[in-house]
Length: 640
Ligand SMILES: [Zn+2]
Image (cartoon, rainbow, N blue to C red; front, side, top):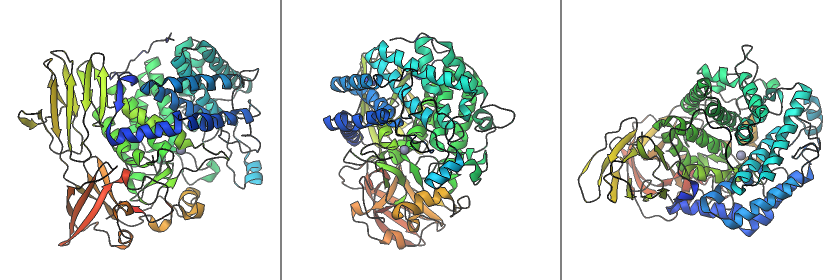
């Protein structure tokens, strides 16, 4: 199945075919376990996927005024499955996807609707007063279009994987039903659904895929109209293009504490999903305003919202998170931040996007996937314990983050290496094997641990070039052919270039792993303690995120290479890690020596000196500090 509409602007960086990449080492093992347990095992196919189908068959999401979001689970599960299937060439999983899609097709209503609402025409936010009466608060939820977005996208990806025009036709009928409904009611996407239209507007991405597959203009027009609605002179929400071009932080676009607005004006996941769609609209239309808006948005989020886990936002909103010492980040937010970094990198080739991707992937993302491969976190935190992803909205197995997470691994796999006019590029030093046609590469393990990797190149032609990313954190990076002389890597725009002579070559890179003590003097000046979001995630749920473990005072954290370090009871840390005075502001310095470890990215003995006193701390990478569902609210801490 081919695209009828070509891109007006193709990617500058081309990713390898997914089946040409495999992840190795500890990270590859975590990915394999997760993909098996959540997607391809008999249990995953029979129980998890089938239950997701039931959410669409049952149509219970609008039994109350406040509509729910069970309709997203099937689409997310299938999107993950399609990507894993392509990457692993898994024929059994392919058949499971085919069977599941056809069961979903059998649920399609006469008007084309497929979704989890009995009233498929319901697209407006729920009535506030009725929500207060029925569920106690004015949520105004309506997730119908959001659920349809995931169903549409999953059907399109499946149609392409399976080369199945029946699935494509069903997807088109689903989209037609929505467009008819919008026309009949005169409602714009920005007025539909929850969170000031951002959830509904994010359907732009699959609508553009559908347009490219069918050439049907109405899908494209919906996207162009939605983008026009994001640059309104009257400032009506969400006005994403105009707000992004202002360069201001999304936390400042609208008053955060104004609960007549529902408190969702800067919801991170939905907002980033819209910019993912906008970048696709740039590729299709060639209108540079869309790219410029996404770039400015990324810059503002990177500047004001990067938290110490390398993700963005605080408690699922943009909230000036970069100024807080404490971090609490939803895994869906990490996944979508990584995706935005990846898409912008493919379009521009700028190294800063891969610097940010690496930080998010090796810290917040991997911390969110537990070692058994079956479970993971809803919220990843900087101390205490993570908030484990419990099944949502009365399901047994579905969770917004868990159903999304495999796509994070696949996004990493296709970011490891890219190809452009100036040559091959190594962007991430994740242990992996990559093939571009007859040319193959192997990236060894050792990056997060010894700060050293080898890159093996086979089958390249003489005259080709290899560019290797020099991470922004590495003050001095050494490079050379194994067995030959090493030199300091002189990076231009974040990459060092090595000419290839056609012979098989093994390069070695050594990075500057000198640990850095980073002081955080910020406080929660933007975070009122009576705010709904703080109460919901921090104080609520039986103290899952106990306020006493939140750093509300200046603290320090330690970065070694690409990873943040933490103390953990996995390495025998005591309760002392919570009671002691922070070294923040005391001119602390440290050294670190790697020690033997099992199933971690790194572990080391850290000598931390402040005010003439030296302490020895056993620490590991924060992504390996928990790795499980623990009842212990004082299990780990990044703070020193
Ligand atoms: Zn989530």
